Amino acid sequence: PSSPMGDIMQTPQFQLRRLKKQLAVERENREELEVELAEQRKLITEKEAQITMMQQKIDRLALLNEKQAADQLETKEMEELREKNESLMVRLHEALKQCQDLKTEKGQMDRKINQLSEENGDLSFKLREIGSHMVQLQEALNELSEEHNAALAQSQEKQSQLESELRAALQDKKCSEEKIEILQGKISLLEDQLANLGESSSQEKGEVMGDILKLEEEKQLQEAALQATKAGLEEEKQQLGDLVSTLQSSLAESHQAKEKLEQDLLAQEAQAQA
Image (cartoon, rainbow, N blue to C red; front, side, top):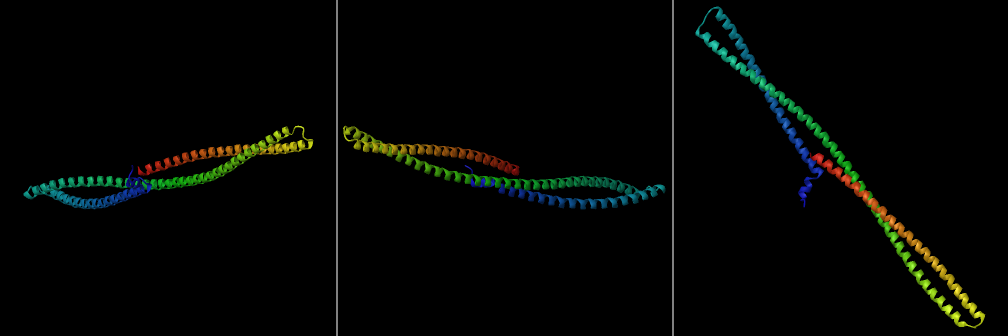
């Protein structure tokens, strides 16, 4: 199982904070490079001043050398001047090489600073874009969850209502069936009574027959009510079945949409982390 610290480290907020820290480190590196670049520029300026002074000395020595050559004065001082001249030329070439190396390094540092600046700008823009997209995805996910919960509550309420109506209809059906059985029993009793009258007066037979007809009529009414109750039960069952099917379809669509939003959100988090 994942630890709470691991879960926190995988949240978008933590990833954004880590990226901001990385940007701060990059800015510090850039500032250090700029300071080092300023020092290198200062060193180049100093080297160029030294080169100018050495060039002036070389020029003076060259003039002096030409003058001494014209006078054909090959003295010990001239030899020393030649040696100094050669030494200065060596130092001059070294200084020129150092100056060129510093200029090359300066160019590389400038390019690196420019590259870091561009990368910093691109990364900041990308982070803002990813953050905005993540907020939109989270809002859409929350809205879908609210709609799903509202639809689920409404469906559950409707289902409870239909189940209550179904129980009431079943109770009415049971009562109608019991009444029909009672009426059938009364009719059978009266038919037996009518058969037992035999040669009795027509008036008595007519009264019994009238009671039988009344009971038959009441029985038919109860049977009609029972048929209506059965039809109502079938309709309630159909509505309940349709509601369950609609709810299942809605749940499946909501789950699919929620999974897609969660996948998009995870993809944005992975992109932000990268």
